[in-house]
Image (cartoon, rainbow, N blue to C red; front, top):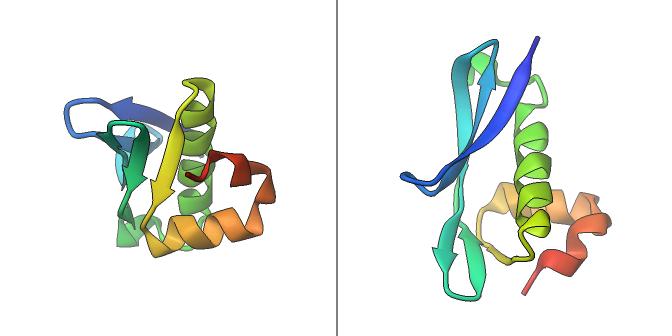
Length: 92
């Protein structure tokens, strides 16, 4: 299984593909000094494969690389941050 996470600037979201097929996204809306992350979706067909974690981690890594902070609103991203304290510095 080959996964890739990219940022879709037009839709303001990070998207994950599996073997070239769209599998899900996490919204990442630029709101001045923070990136708001209100919603994460993995298509049912791709559920149970750990893709939300791959997607969340890749999105947070990119946001950190861009020197930005986040305002997590999505319950999945909030839970991900609790399990991965190495991203705590990104929360505004």
